[in-house]
Length: 347
Image (cartoon, rainbow, N blue to C red; front, side, top):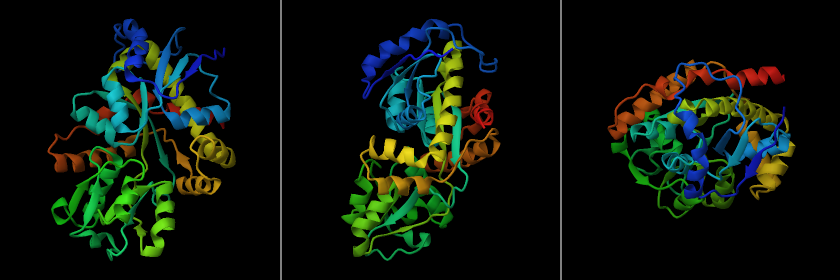
């Protein structure tokens, strides 16, 4: 039975969300065990607060947004720092991030669990980031980064990529100068153009725009040849102690997987509805981003993903002095096949 019960919010203040999240506290006290089977049905009156703006639009465009059996309140929250802040405030149930935020959340005493994972079927041919090179630096290879200033954002995917790039090039942080800058908006392209840094990881349409604007001055990018494609849904571990929310998360993961398959299969609708209408980009920029992303992959077995995540943890731990944690502990394996099974059912 379909129960359209949605409340869309363009921006949800964290203090206001605190009250909204309180509704499931009684059920959470029942304490669904971490190894207990997920409930098959979502109880009436259940609500999730979800910080996953892209999927919200995909669900709207695909016609799935009114099909949930529970209420969804959409928070305009994305990225690790915002999601972690909302989690700490008890103001968010589900967040959408890359692989680094769950690691840092755990290191800072916030237990979280990954409940969904999406990748790219050709991650090397369709990288999320390229290394932007400032005009006049003469950098043409990764080894050429030695002695250069590199934009670095610890705690974010771009920061981890920089460390991987250095490792691949046979360099350490002592061989370069890492310049801490937030990887938000146009900060990195502007830092490159103004010669504040010599290199910086650029993603999405920023690659296209940087080359178009500064290519005539000698700006370039380097392909790093490293897999950088993880996209996860994660939650606070305490959220999954609530059987009602645990069941609702399962339903959301299934819808999330189908929404991203729809995006791949309907590129024109996605470009028009998300990149142009929602994000204010040009159709040409939207086409560039769709082509760059390639085909999504939602695996039903997380073994390889966990092994890659472990490598990331060990790299970051060595750089930051944090303890090496077990990557498998970041994942709730009860959700491992949920997304892949949903795609099989919809095929």
